[in-house]
Amino acid sequence: MQKDKVANLIHLHFIVFIWGFTAILGKLISIDSLPLVWYRMLIATLVIMVYLLWMKIPLKVDKKTLLWFITAGIVVALHWVTFFLAIKVSTVSVALAMMSTGAFFTALLEPLLFKRKIIGYEIFFGILVVMGLYLIFKVETNYSYGMGIALLSAFLAAIFAIINGKLVQTNRPAVISYYELGIGVLFLTIILAVNGSYTVDFFTVGTMDWVYLIVLGVLCTAYAFIAAVKVMRVLTPYTVMLTTNLEPVYGILLAWFIFGNEEKMNPLFYVGAGIILATVIANGVLKQRTGIKRKVS
Image: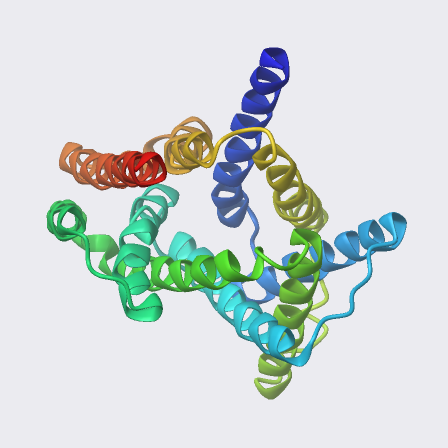
């Protein structure tokens, strides 16, 4: 049993590493963020569809659930478009640092959407996150536009996480992913059609871009999602949460290694990013302990 947990923990770190590598691929792929996400979601949808057919998993859902799938699909499409746009107009490090605020936005949205009381330490942590953001904005003014886009992406990610937190209670994760990614593709297809983007240039993708897109769609999206769900069956939510928070760390380290000086920031940037990351981890730790106390009492 212990060996099984260790193996799954190593697997989880590999998955989180893959998620961190997603930002690197976004920088390496030369096409714009909107077509990039369209290709990513299309490839991942096709892969998951094959998986569902292979496993003979039924796709039937009720109308109410389908409406939530549509909402989540549009939200995740916009989240990824803004995320990759932020990377392209700034740096991987800046985008990932801003994405760390996703947990903060979730803490703000949950009381509004689920009508629960605001927890005292969440207000304190919120102030710390704002302080961290202030430091980053203060020293990296050249990337203000990218930071704003990345914060919007983090906000959309928080909404997506809250919706999925409800959907996963009554639906298979692979089914959720198939519908959300497929709907996201349809949503972006409509936008691209309205913009008149379907030209010869749109479908002219370089060889290396195709390689990166396939890795992004198959490994970083379809595989990582399904594998993460399987890992969660063995590891505790607390372990998963703490490990997942290492995503920006892995991503920033990878960016240093691959892009070199382009990714080096002012020291105060890392202080601000560290404050945000530490706040996210502390928030998760306190929530876990509070949950355990409630169960015991």
